[in-house]
Amino acid sequence: MRRTQNIQSGRAFCSGGGVKDIAARVAVVRFPGSNCDMDTIHALRTIPNVQADLVWHEDLTLNGQDAVILPGGFSFGDHLRAGAIAARTPALAKIISIADRGQPILGICNGFQILIEAGLLPGALMRNTSLRFVCRWVCVRVENSSTCITNRTTKGAVLHLPIAHNEGRYYAPEPDLRRLSKECQIVFRYCNKEGRVVSEANPTGTTDNIAGICNKKGNVVGLMPHPERATEPILSPYGDFHGATLLQSMLEMNR
Image (cartoon, rainbow, N blue to C red; front, side):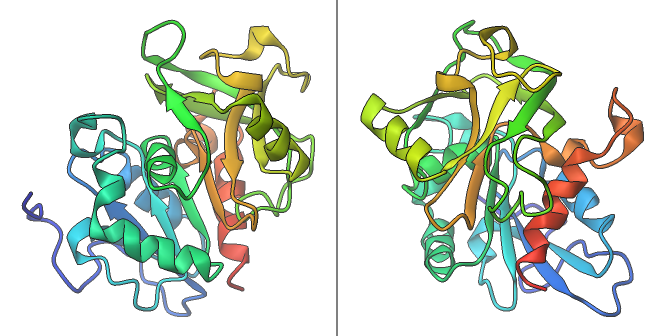
C-alpha cells in the first residue's frame, strides 16, 4: 500500500497548532482504511502544549513520541478480520516494544481490534448481536481510574461517548473474565444514565457490558467508544466533553 500524498515521511503532517513548549508528543498511526485519524489529530490539537503527529504506518519510528494512538476506521478494509492485517505490520512490533517500556498506547474502535489481534490485550471482538452497525451515543461507567486514559476521572464516573461499529462485542472465556475483573483490567462498562450496569444499556451484546479493557500495567487501553468525537460541547448531545478528559489523562503520564 502506498503512502497517501498528504503524509510525508520523516515529518509531522499535523501538529498542535503553533506549539512552543511541547509537553507531550503523540503519534497517531494511519493505516490504509483508517478514517478517524484526522478526528483524533483535531481532538489532540485542543490540548495545550501537545504535538500530534499523523504517521503513516510504514514510516513509524517512535523517535521522541511519548504516546501512540491507533485510531478508528477499517484498517486494510477489515479483510480476514477487523484489525488482523494491521496487527501483523512492522508498526505493531515497534508499538509492542514501547508498550513493554510502559509508554501509553490507546486503541480506539478499530485500534482496539488491532491491539487484541496483536496480543497486547486479551479476548476477542465479535460482531454485534444485532448483526448491524451500531452508531449512537452511550453512557459508560469508569471501572478503573488508574489507567493511562482514566487517571483524571473517578471510579464510578459516568461518561457520555459515541460508538460506531459492527464488530465491538467483547468476548473472553469465563476464567479470563474473572481474571480481568480481579486484576482491574476492565476499564469501562456500558451503563444507564444513573450509572447502573444493566442489559438495557448494552448496545451490542458485549459480554458483561464491557466497553474497554487494559493490560496489567494499565498503559495499554482499548475501547470501542470514540473519545475523539466527544472533546467539544458542540459535538455532544449532552453538552459536555468527556472525551477530552480521557485524552488529557493519557498525556498526564508523561508530565
